[in-house]
Image (cartoon, rainbow over all chains, first blue to last red):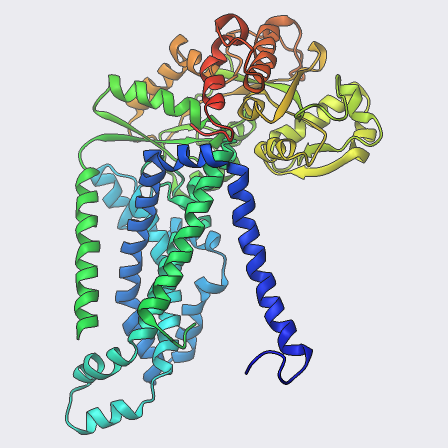
Length: 266
Length: 319
């Protein structure tokens, strides 16, 4: 529907609002970039520390996302298709990490890692569980696994069950049906969810603050590093890393749109 | 089918990374050092030197806000060394029995000193503590329940007899010191009192004004070996290094006061001019970063030379 042809002022207002939101975010980025200045942009973007942190963020969130997917796809499928005892209870418990602050997740992880058998393992090998990059992965996984299952359930919910029934009636086993029929149909949803989950993992900070703490070069993923440098008064690092984070988010979302095309999750 | 194949490849790549990382973590004694965020710059330098001299020992920091540590240690019962931002937090650990042999006479590598900061150009012309009571001055205070600087604000202004008036002027209740530094940097407040170590991070964007001796606070920064330290001996060695002349000198480069004896009264206020020289260096450092023609050398800014050069390198501070 072309603007202004019918419907008077209402569509115009809606589009203007959308434009306003866009303008706000563009303003946020540009004003900070102006604050940073061209000379400093070159300086900070050419520092290896910036790209080490970037790389750390990318690979930790990639690993934790892949584990989340391993768990999330079957779990989401189960929640979407099968009727089993305590289904609603499980569904609501799985939702918890989305509702509860990641800080709580971080605090609760102490409960697991300081008990048998983990205390024994850490004693035997002389390591501190959760104080290194595994802690980062653990926090990211704990926070995103539920999120992932939730999104997968939404993706599978969009696919009519008729296709599965037809496939089963033609003699395919349920596992064959899942891989040959359901998964390809849910492809867009899965890719879209994957990128959302990845972005969520890359943005994790509160849980890390409580559970892991920062060791420079080992556990300081970008959002955490921004906090560290903000505390050290290094506004140059803070601003330039925030810009990298925003660019990372924008490219992740555009990648999702290009690869995944239209999906119902987003 | 292609999707599944892609996913599998993706998984394999992810797992292989994990293996690489696992190998990188094996076979060395690594100390877990709970250290306050504010000490990051100085401690990273110390870590560098210490690891070079003891190749078999690795120092792993767990930098957090100091307020997070007590909960962390209570839950995890992990860690070798503990160096929170203020003695206040260490005493909490002593109280709970996490630290058994803390001695306030010997275990203090460095001190914080209070200074006044104002935004660049000092718009409200703040010269002394008394100026905080002038009407219209937006004062940034710390929350005494969240950070030690809040307790010191109250102490200082009460001693000066202007606490009630300053409370009326307060426009901000910060939960940690960097909040005050940032607020001054972005002109959200007209004046505040912070540690010299915080002020020195914002040389380009704030003015630093030393406080007269009888209102200048000296705050201990202690370090201790935790009771459940896994490598007690190694931890003790690192602690000794921090307490040595050489370790202290590193703290001095970041605007801590490191004189072994600073005479203070019961409340912790300065009694003589031991820290005057440091204050002069600090004021000069703030001038040097803003003014290109100001000479930067041992005579003008003392041990702060590196800090000044770091901040002169870029408009927005980094390293």
